[in-house]
Length: 248
Ligand code: NAP
Ligand code: GCO
Image 1 (cartoon, rainbow, N blue to C red):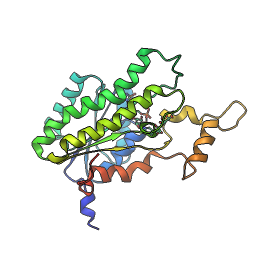
Image 2 (tube, rainbow, N blue to C red):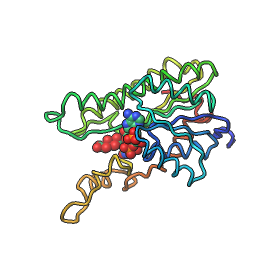
Image 3 (cartoon, rainbow, N blue to C red):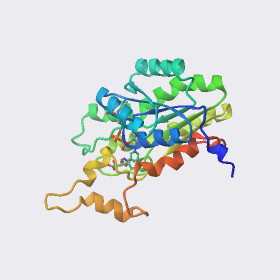
C-alpha cells in the first residue's frame, strides 16, 4: 500500500488541549507523520512544560494559551496560526473535562461547564477553521468523542450528554462539508490511562486496586487500560489522505 497516503508532510495541525494526555499523544503521532504542530491549553505552566516535552521527542510545536470556550480567543489563535504557520489543515478537538458527580448533587453551573468545553467548544473551534479549509479546498476535523457518546453510566450525566452531542455534531459537519472535501470524523476511545482517569485507578486504603480499575480491565477486550499512544494509528489515518472517503 502506498505509504504516501499516510503522509502529513506540509500540513498544519492544531490539537486542542494537547499539553499532555491523549492530545499530546495525538499531536506527537501527527508530527511523526510530518505535520507542523500547534496546540493550546489554559495554563501557562502546562504550556511551558508541554513545549519541553515536545522538544524532548524532537517536535518543534507552537503552544498557545487559549480557552476553547472563548470564541474571541479561538478566532485570534486561528488567525495567529494562519499568519505564522499557514492555514490549518487538520483540527483535532481533543480538549475536554469530566465531572463525576451524582445528578442530584451536580449544580447547573457544573453541568454547563462540562457541556461548554466538551460540546460547545468543538463547534466554536470547527466554525473558526472551516472557512480556511474551504478556501484551501481540503480539511480534516477529528472530534475526540467517547464510549459515553454511546453509553450512559452513573455520575457522568453532563459528560455523556456532551459526548453524545459531539458524536452528532461530527455527523452534522460531515453531512454539510464532506462534499467540499472536508472530512469530519470522531474517535471514541475506551478507557485510557491519563490524568483525567487517574482517580479511577487510585489504590484503595487497603492497598487493593480501585474497583472501577478491576471492572474496566475485566470488560476491555485487551484486558488493560489503553495508553494514549494506542490512538496514534487511528489519528494519523483520520488526518491523512488514507481516509479521504471516510466521513462521519
Ligand atoms: P486530560 O488528561 O484531562 O487532558 C485534558 C486537556 O484538555 C488538558 O491539556 C487541558 O489543559 C485541556 N483543556 C481542558 N479544558 C480546556 C479548555 N477550556 N480550553 C483549552 N484546553 C482545555 O484528558 P484526557 O484523558 O487526555 O482526555 C482528552 C480528551 O479525550 C477529552 O476530550 C476526553 O473527554 C477524551 N477521552 C478521554 C478518555 C480517557 O479514558 N482518558 C477516553 C475517551 C475520550 P489545561 O487544563 O491546561 O487547559
Ligand atoms: C469515566 C471515564 C470515561 C472515559 C472515556 C471512556 O469516568 O467513565 O472518564 O468517561 O474518560 O470517556 O470512553
